[in-house]
Image (cartoon, rainbow, N blue to C red):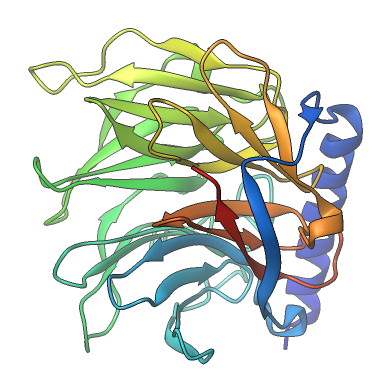
Length: 321
């Protein structure tokens, strides 16, 4: 159960997010394809802080998620059970100095081929904020500190270069961290990553020798090439018109992607330089979706219910290729 402080902090974040949704409604047009047979596969307990923020899929059919408000990492088994793998230590001040949101939260998560999980924790304190690692059967450990005045959010793993990339939604930065841990490097601080008052750089994926990054405030998806020397190339804006966009997944058809639009409770289909199309809405069960992952023709969509304050869930839908 939340403490009184955490409830208050979460309420503040919900008010800010709700205001963002009202000021910047989705401009995508409506349609029914390419997702069908949408159904809620799992309901989570909001009273326990089970606000699912990010997801990583495993070959055995399980899914690993971060429960943001509970400061937890969990495994969702194919049989329907939820196993809490780690609960991170609460900051001494309760997390009230976590930038923008005012409560500590676990955010992005990725899974390496050997089963190791890497995930992010933002607390507003220097002793806990950063990149964490959880090996199979082990205990969580911080492997890289990130600035306490930032908000680490999206996470991507480049296995070939053994590099982790992190978006910072407050500092408008993409950080670069070795998988072994160490001191982070500011890989990109391009203006396109900055916020306009709430949260900027957010979702993050690696594709075609580039990092693709969403910006929640600006409603954009940008592409940043990884140059031969490892540095960031010139930023190019690929998608516009999606204020409130959170995380996303590529469908496998060129650069086409499915994106979670948090404030309006929508999933949209988007392609570079084309108008986005709404493919799932609140009527399908979405409650402020935060992230999307694909396993074959099945889309996994997490809803954290940050604004609706009801029914955080995992929704599954069929991807019609």
